[in-house]
Length: 82
Image 1 (cartoon, rainbow, N blue to C red):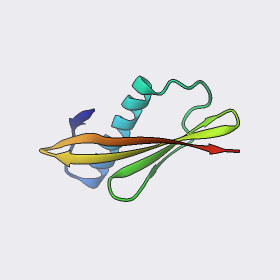
Image 2: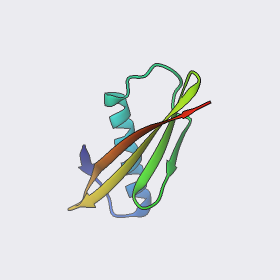
Image 3: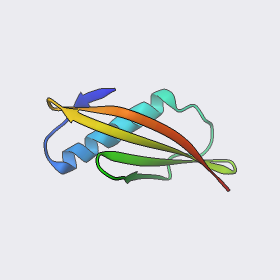
Image 4: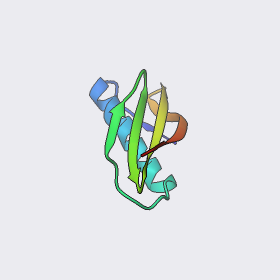
C-alpha cells in the first residue's frame, strides 16, 4: 500500500498515519476496542495498540519512501496478554 507524500517531517508523519488507518480499516477484523495509541518507533516505523478483551493487539508498521511515495514495507502483529 502506497500513497504520495510531502517532504517535510510533519507531512511524512501524517502520511504514515493515514496509511496505517487505511490499512487497519481494510485488514484488521478483530472486534473490540478502538485504537489506544499510535506511537512513532525507530526510523520510519509506528507501533499501534488495539485493545481487545484480556489482551492488546500490537501492530508494528515499517515504511519506505522513494520518488515521493510512502509505502508500507512491513507489518508485524504481536499480542500483549494481561
